Image (cartoon, rainbow over all chains, first blue to last red; front, top):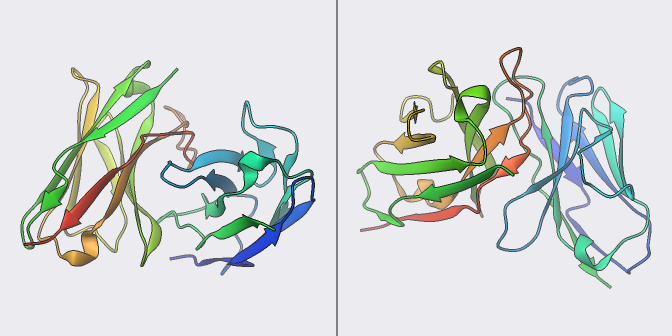
Amino acid sequence: AIRMTQSPSSFSASTGDRVTITCRASQDIGSYLAWYRQKPGKAPKLLIYAASTLQSGVPSRFSGSGSGTDFTLTISCLQSEDFATYYCQHHYSYPRTFGQGTKVEIK
Amino acid sequence: QVQLQESGPGLVKPSETLSLTCTVSGGAISSYYWSWIRQSPGKGLEWIGYIYPSENTKYNPSLKSRVTISVDTSKNQFSLKVKSVTAADTAVYYCARDPGGYIAVAGYFDHWGQGTLVTVSS
């Protein structure tokens, strides 16, 4: 199975900050990568798929980039609802696997 | 708007079979791929498998020998069974929709149920 590794595991930030989360795949997955945001007690919500395509209804402050093995999720101006945990997931092959998560906390 | 709702027992005894059902509303179940995903503190998010309502299924090799996913299109429901459960199967179980359709599976998940906690304990 392809291993997805996110960094950092957690960090603190303030409302209005620009933040970047990194995801690395253990092998080349092309652009087959999705990002999710999960708030406590809720299901993950799809933000981005195919590495850089914004899911319908997701604010434009979210953007994704990368291909091959290295990917980033950027939030251009952090809002209160963005303090949550973020997961990457490849959709290149089976089984689908997720990163371990990056928790964004309030500074 | 598509909505998914998991249902089933919250407590299962070790060695028994875990059974969950996902009811889909707001859209036809026959047009998409439907997955089960679980989340535990120890293993994070884990994709279990999917079904496409022509009875096409695919499972995670780590669980394949113990898992069955089935569908009842007349009720707009799909189900999960995990046999011979242990404490390691304790998790929040989610059902989710893959927006891919007849042409191809997409591989990511655009609609999720709220999740249901299943605890394996005697």
